[in-house]
Length: 98
Image: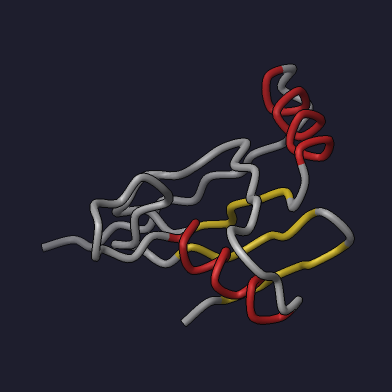
């Protein structure tokens, strides 16, 4: 279910499908954050909780790329880039006529 687009050092980019909550889901409801944490825990055989920085998110009904960081230093740098509008975002709307 998890579509990893890029995993380079402390950065991981994932394609979020529509309908999946990015973060903060109620207990028992899957979220993109929980899926990525589970993936990292298994891939790197990490004991305990996995750190995952979330510099941005996208709404539940929307699909698109979400970038995460695997450590706090990278998270701070990514958050700064988003805050200073150094990240270029492209939006595409697909509509269906009745």
